[in-house]
Image (cartoon, rainbow, N blue to C red; front, side, top):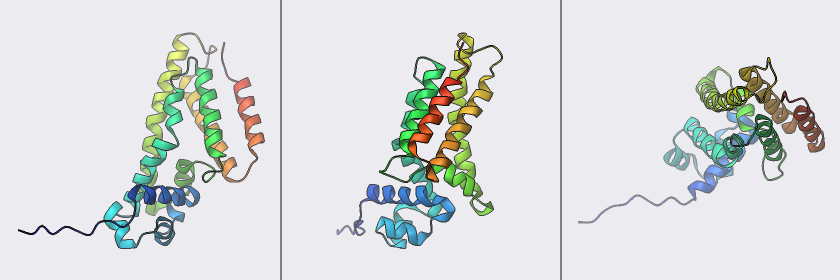
Length: 198
């Protein structure tokens, strides 16, 4: 009995996904056309669909890759000994990632969530859901810092999380618009000088 096998893929799935991530990161979900994606990935549309599903499924896989490769510092920062150290690690690591010359500037989550219109509602919802999970972990860490007497009286951990996330998102927007790294480094320094430690 002869076993008939499908034709093997003629491209590296990991490399193609990495290329797709670059397109989504530089153009956002809506800005990335299927032509942009297939050209960058070196695949035909049928091959893209066969390997990854539709554009939305491809974006979700690219987002998984982005979180594994580019945002690993977020969970690592939570292990820092103080809340200020957590903030410092997050800010400096984000700055390095956002201003790196090895990839697009800015933050994929910010770029894609800001640009999402009604037709990409599920993508925006996915990004917001992932962000909420990260923010919950950060709030838990800041709640602990407050319970241990590390933060000044009157500081609300939830508001402190929103403040830090807003700064991180603002840095991403500024980095993507070409603000010099030195200026953003000064911003990080100022934020840490203002941190509400006792």
